[in-house]
Image (tube, rainbow, N blue to C red; front, side):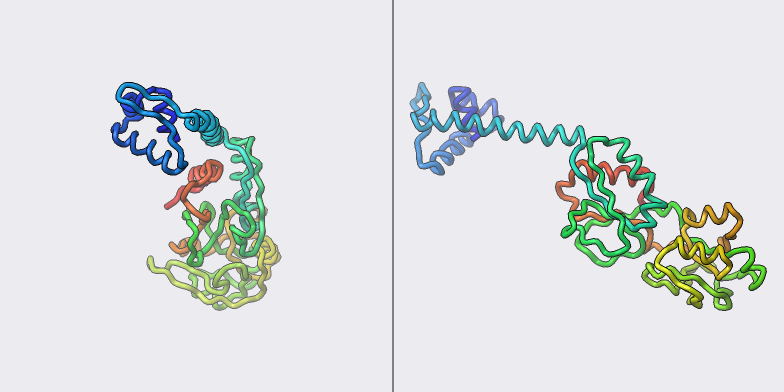
Length: 292
């Protein structure tokens, strides 16, 4: 259609070919294809002149309208790329969203005021397609999936903590294997809650811990540990208020291990034709939590 419109405007196949940057034979072939598709002759050709048939004149006007509409659509998409807008639905765990990602969402909303940011926090598996989610931020080891997963850094690693009162009564573990003699507080939302990873002599080691109490909330685990009920493994960000208040003390820091299979991931359905607003969130995630 564009080739046909250019031929009519240029009043010759040769001039149209020059303007389109393609061989004259290709221009002639495309117009012939269009005529075959429509079952109508659009142009009368002679060696010296070129004129529209009645069908060609009627089609040409509608073709110009259609091409203008396409250009408007392309212009709208281009404007959306330069000025992000529309709805962006993001999901994360409740505590991850509250304690770790809230500054990310705040900064995104500040930078892109025309985007309607919809943050959906849930401690369950969220089906991105069924629930209309553009991007999920998930921690730990991910199951095999056809989705795209970009690994991000873990700005606040999981560390081991206990209260001063508990340590006074039960003693301080000096090595990971000492945890076998201690009551431990377990976060059940993890893939292997009773196996705590450490690094001993630069080798990864998993320690099976004895469960004193368990919960699917790091905040609950923190409060149990602060009350002197056992040893806990917590994200630094969540443990920080208790550490500052003196109700928790970090332990075994020289043995902390960050498994390469874990960490934080940005998960989205496809990298093809990624919308500008999703790409902007990925760029901000990379800025705040660089991939590695």
